[in-house]
Length: 118
Image (cartoon, rainbow, N blue to C red; front, side, top):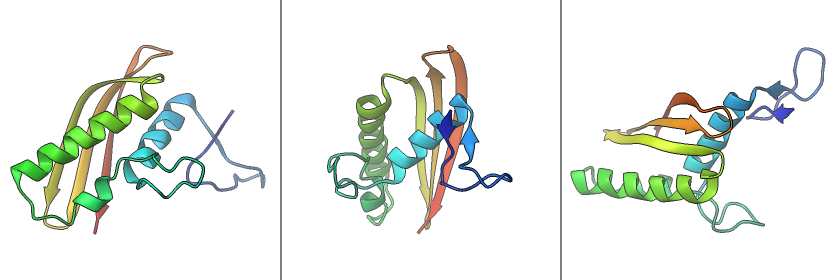
């Protein structure tokens, strides 16, 4: 059983559960939008991507965001997924991250899109 993210209760009043594939997507979302230093017991967990999106939009920024995110995913989630493609775009105040990955346990290909407006 995997606990669903964000934490909530299901219709029976119990902790909501989720599938393995959704749990991996949830872990990706948490990793992407957690800044290093936010987790007390894991101060280096996170991607730091939210700190970079306030910089002026440029091809260099997009490359930096992509490199930073690839490194974080490989470090923290490399045992559960194989990153196949990653695209980071920043338009005005919206950050969009498209991720395609292979779930190592099932060998199923998955895709996820994460968007934040700042």
